[in-house]
Length: 369
Image (tube, rainbow, N blue to C red):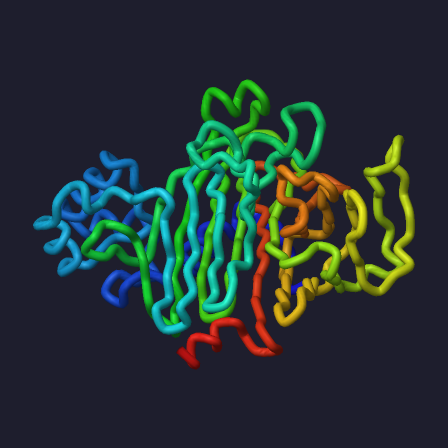
């Protein structure tokens, strides 16, 4: 674990300004407060932001003058994000797809395979949560006082920033060094308040780098009283055959809740690696080691650097309609002990997903083609 996942309100402003400077152009980077920077940009920049709001897109950066001139001559529909947003890297031939429904990452394609799985019974029209990819469980994991897995996966998140827009109107980037990025936000609405009357801001940042997908979720308490929550990234990993995979990750000796039993019972793991041969639903507490999903020539390393403390493993073994044979859910979460967030504070989580093929980063397969 690198650093505390909680940021106090006093350190929030400097933290956000520092993190945002990495994707500002050199002409817009500054050490001045954000509101002063905006004032200095003048009416032209404010007009640009108003147009962005009108299309439902609020950027987290202020464009330079050259970019502004290009936008003046662009068609209005060229500023409207397509759904799903696609992040691409033409050098490594990797691609990520993100739907605004639940801010769900549904695909991370490498030259050889897609890391994620979308179930055959999944619905992508926004009428229900997407069963596949990386659904976000918040502010509740599993059953509880509100609906199963909370409301975040049901909501239409707003894409507030994407690295670059191409001429066709879809957002993409093909830089090997810096990677590509999309940022989504979720704030309270009438539906969330009915279930969970707290003021919050969820900020979800997806970074596609060379051979690495980073998923960072930040939750800020925007209210005047503390609240608590649980949550997880309910990630569906694609596999060729569930009966032949192995999951490694420092599980031996860890306590876990076996939810296939009635009632659920706590057990202690006796194996170094996990294999799936029956319906599986387990929650491992205090499990922060790297996870390795081994599937023949393929291997995916899942690394949590902060925030997430627990691991859930799920597979509906035998459920043909769900496509059980070709996926396993390995879910990084805060499940066993809720996070308590004081007013103004921010909780930060981060997961890196690194796909390999034949012992090498999967993107290197593109070097042979």
